[in-house]
Amino acid sequence: MYKEYGWKSGATHAHGFILPALLELLNKEKNRSILDVGCGNGYLANYLIDKGFNVYGIDASSEGISNAQKSNPTRFFKQDINSKILPEMLASHTFDTIISTEVIEHLYDPRGYIEFCKSILATNGELIMSTPYHGYFKNLIMALTGTFDRHFTALWDGGHIKFWSKKSLIELLGEFDFKVVEFKGVGRFPYLWKTMFIKVKI
Image (cartoon, rainbow, N blue to C red; front, side, top):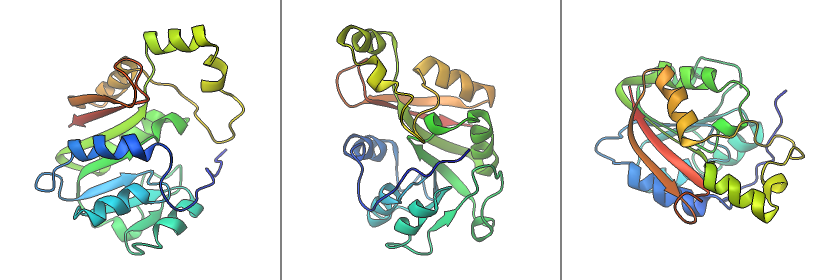
């Protein structure tokens, strides 16, 4: 069952470490037509638009899209969570780049999500995504410091459903013939990263 995230306008706590890393992975000359899949309240996409990038956004959240459209009303569209078809207003667009930050951990069907991204991506297109990082040392530190339950809480309605490591994420993307171009851990110290970015190509 879909649960609204509860979007408000403005940046979230994660944008401080997500945006700099994403900008390092993007290039206006190469990434000319970008779709933000799971754009939330549109903060990140609107930020990129202000920087001169050509960006559109889709999200299942009515609250999020309503907030996003306040800045750029013709750039954001509601997407049904189970739909594998782009909204009609975007059907004629070709996207050479998909960005998707902090989305896959909220999904019951990550394979359907990756399949959808691949189906709308142009030939030789790039998928750049982020999700909270999990690995042996980070999990060990959380267990030793008593923060494991707080981090993996089951009490957050609409929260994280799946938890990804670098290995499991690459394995999933490999099922759809995506090849890794770049991996980047961001926030905190190496192997204790808050989140990870991966850039892949068809």
